[in-house]
Length: 142
Image (cartoon, rainbow, N blue to C red; front, side, top):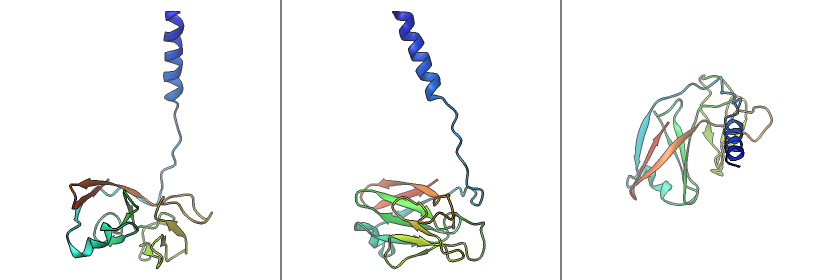
């Protein structure tokens, strides 16, 4: 009985170690950075309410967009995932504050999950880690 349990454990271990093929986005390289947003500052005040969105320049590849989605924060790079970096590869925020738009090809991306809203591309927006530091700060990094 003991041998059977060991055999099952080993089989389960190898089954969970199965190699997965993740396709890396060839258009966007890694941008190493860490930045802290002080929510007490007026430019980040929108992040204090659910649905608030703020654009931050000079961070990441083409700046970042940070969104308050209720009890959580999301941060995405503003570089268009569906094309190489160029003069028009910085996404813009749609007026509804729910989508980002790539100006060169017109592809929209959902701010809640980073997914494209068309079948033209399979690459999602580049996501960054957000850690809340106390009540008044967000640390964003990759």
